[in-house]
Image (cartoon, rainbow, N blue to C red; front, side):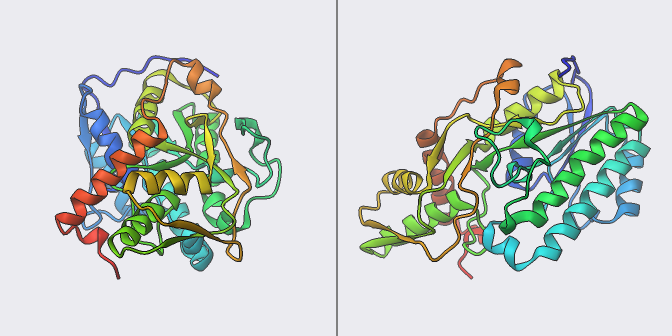
Length: 323
């Protein structure tokens, strides 16, 4: 692990994926730095288009790039659209990383995902658990794309000596999350289900699986703070885990969500649905050793996420409409 000092002062920083939950959080965090934030809309440049991305980067000449753009989704979406998840993520990564190299970008941060680790990795999961066992089958397509992305950063670093680094965030949630029940991850799905159940005066809330898997969660603003910290202080081949260091069962999470939302009914599990990986807790000791700490505990973070959901639902945000 190599410490460094990279100043963002006066730099142009391109956030690829600025409209997503993570990208928008990183933009909020970078607003307090003395840098110029560069973004591009899909109507102007499709990040899957290598030629278009290369031309845009050559023209705008960012000093630093944060690659937060990705096609994401939960177990159902990954299982239904495996080709889309593999192809689109590979295309985005290839275009942005290669284009950044050609444009002379000084520093690039690639965002991966904790799903890159083997299904039965040691807990907490250290960075060196990568490629030591089979992946969880329900999201292997997305995981393989993300593994390719971090290996591409390593390869460019090795061959060309560029300062490209990778961060592997745990399960993220917070403002800007996806509440489409067919595509959402567990926290926004539970928040929406609990909200709808409360509004309908339902007597129970159904959750997928047995409720026994353990998961770690990190508020997206904490994740964004960690990413900026890594941009400024880290330079090395090895990817860095970004997590809270604490996990809960899905059943415990569902109860916390119901408490935050105010739903008083029963929680019913559906063991016929897949659980996914039994446990997934990141070993974030390397990041912690660099002087970073999360600010949100899970309950406070859930309140913030639910507040955002309610505010945007009242405002008629189309992203929250039910299909």
